[in-house]
Length: 485
Image (cartoon, rainbow, N blue to C red; front, top):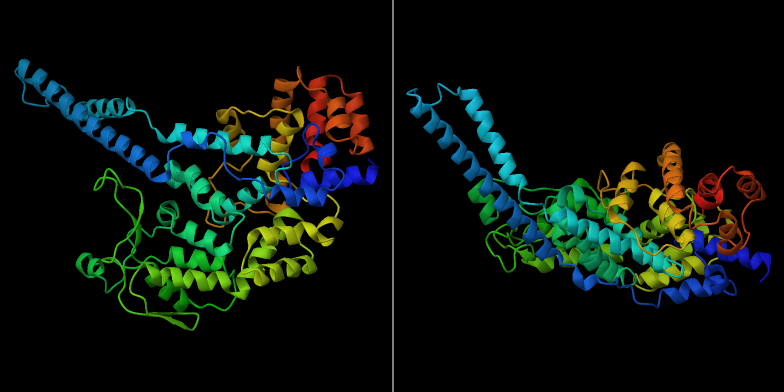
């Protein structure tokens, strides 16, 4: 294999995949572009996913645990108050006087907290198991292009585990992973109708002013989901929609909610359309009238947003920015947008258009990887295929990209300026990881076998002069060859 072929393979693995792993360059070196495209034909499922609960069941499990915690806390609090009242009576004192009202209150609250804490939170173990399987899918992939696409779309249509931990992993599996290589309209309908998204964007109790619930409860509209769908998920900013369109679309989305777990122990947490919350009558969005009076009104608007030319450009720009460059070549963006329009939003074909374009390969590997990409790249280079989810998610937290926990609906940014200040923290992670794997990882073997010696000569020299294997590994992990794509 020529050096140029090896260099193309390394670029393919870094820019579009999850990073080189032992043997990967040899496997794809004869045709890196063809190998990237071929990976899109393989199943995108997760190993052992059958052991994970669906989102609605996970939501019910956590809701049930929280209800038990509340009940236990109330019982313990009341029991403590009765115990202290009995002690006062035994001493011949008026209730609360001997112990003191403040002391009695503190003791009762302490008993309530202890009783609640005795019931473990089931959401945390589910989150960690989801994280483990998701990460190991990227470690096991030959290239990781398809997994990176799942990560991209999960971030594009992000939710936050800080707000709804129980559903965070299941949402990605059910709505994103299942549609990441299909048609954009199907992905859009799946994510916007998923209970996790409706919960995250506060649509559960959004109600039209003239709906039955709106009149009876004197509550109103929440515009979050309409605004984020138009601004972030489809059209992009400054693409011709106005505040009136946001309000009309928010009215269209009223009634999209989930079944309360307490009301239905079998179907709680599942999507439902509640007509009592829905604003009656037709709505005009982007100049088009929608007269449907049920859930189909929202689906019709979503279908039209998916087909809008601005959506094609917005999606193409974000994909190219994520994979290729902070300022992606306009020619590449237009090629991808054209593929989107010509194929009616076939996301697999858009991805193929990206990796088939010479424009996607011309830029040098200068784009800074996000922390998640860098960490997985390190682990893949060692040949490790299993992770401790506690350590992994803790590392992501330290690096500023906690899994499924973006600080806003915009998701995690893809530009260097947003991450460059955190590169110093990567040194701590690199040192800690190097210490753990130094007994099983030879830095010279990684350079020669994993990277086929396609690493800067300065890095090779620095690794060769290192005082220990741990130091050599840390230097390698912190090099531009590892951190940029």
